[in-house]
Image (cartoon, rainbow over all chains, first blue to last red; front, side, top):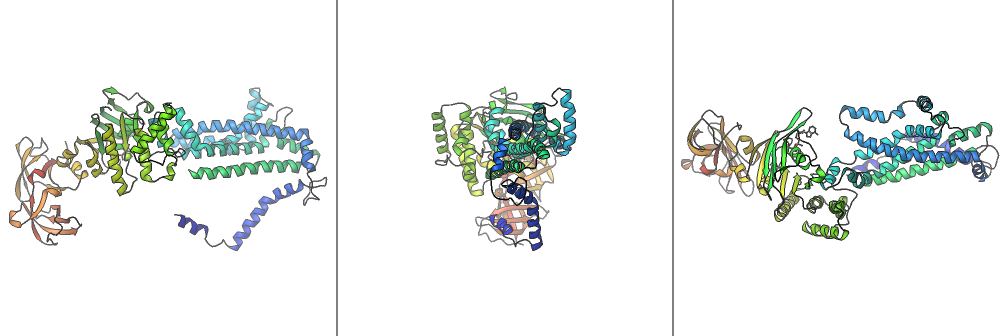
Length: 270
Length: 354
Ligand SMILES: Nc1ncnc2c1ncn2[C@@H]1O[C@H](COP(=O)(O)OP(=O)(O)O)[C@@H](O)[C@H]1O
Ligand SMILES: [Mg+2]
């Protein structure tokens, strides 16, 4: 079997045009990142690339700006709560999804990913009206609910996939050995889906950290998430502080992705 | 340790009737095998016993008491799965100790019991390995140990040898039987392999499309099947159709077949209008000289198998008899030969049980 796979991986290098295409694609994807990261280290007063000189002053400036730091903290807090809540709910939903069989199961899956399919703006507007109706308009709780809603599908998809890998006979074996449903969940299912679960949590966090439209509409009084704070900032000042903030966000995402990669590796081990 | 009785068990999947009145009984310490082709309802029966499925009708009694309302985790039955169902994130020792840990036994006791059972199934020294780090045969023994360490009232095994290669299968088969007999545990064993069923069981239930076609000892199943289906599924068999049947006593018949008359035993209750077949197991047949023979025929196939010579002989009426001859017998395709039969191994049975 390893022979078969190695034949594939050692096949002749792809054609030249295809190679060029891939390089172009990467340049296209990476250019904004490289520029913004580069610009964050400039000594000049404007966002520019290539940077002039090398300095950390805009990072210092970022952490001295109360509005941006508040935004960062708010985003981190909302992201963390989103990750925890979506993961817990997604585990329950995914387990329910396994019990549902036949045609209904497809509809259930679709329902769970609906927030991905409906345009974010529509969800945001709908949620805005709803939140005002239940008197949570312009509150942090309302914003938090919006983030949970928008991030839920990511956690669900990842966790449901992990759960599908756990054969039903393991649950039966556990029961036959005397375990209650809860014990089976804690001792067998949870450890086995842990990589998928952590992955779901990280995706949910990154997604929440990134949300703009829904945050804009549900923005609580006197509070800003980092993307909103950055946008406000850029409206009045075009300083490399924004580039520093963006770089920090990018680092956070890359850290998350690296962690996911590591977890995917773990998942394969089973 | 328990007597188990399955009464008229029924199970329906949507509009498909998987079990249509299954009745079985296992006395204390017996190993009862469910034998039958794929899809006949063996696993469904076992899963009802284990408590993984709820039957639509009938009852399951252990020591005379219904257990249908007892959930799987409180039945105290050990289950061994075809795919072993070992917990992949736990070591061998953790897998085996899982049930003991749930019972909150002291750590020391868990360790000694796990150690003892590992020795019993010859897994010494593998306690720290993960399931994926040991061979299929070893995984199978972990599954067995995990169930046995709890001293279950009843052991349920669903095709436990199906994923093993032939050599290991033999070894694990005897291990299972020895352990079961030593511990005096009552067991239900599912298989589609007739030799496995014959060799291991106290009782065999041959299943046919959600019913039990025959429930008897391996010997009776083999020698006195109630219908052709059972005979077919329990080993090599020759069938001849009979021209005339006369009842000569209780379960005794006189038949006209392929130009001769035979007196023989058969299933009770056959009348002269029952469609019947004569069962001749290969070992009831012997090549002989033409003048001493019960049947005469032409050899249409002969193959040297090492320990025996496999022959197929076509009778003048068109019937074909397969038998094993002595390996050095001088038999060639096209030869006219005689066949003597051992009357005590001939058996008359209906084509289909009423
Ligand atoms: N969950 C299910 N849903 C529908 N049909 C099933 C299900 N499980 C088993 N069956 C059907 O019931 C019949 C008996 O199955 P089973 O007991 O597994 O047979 P086997 O004798 O091979 O173990 C088969 O025809 C199978 O297709
Ligand atoms: Mg089966």
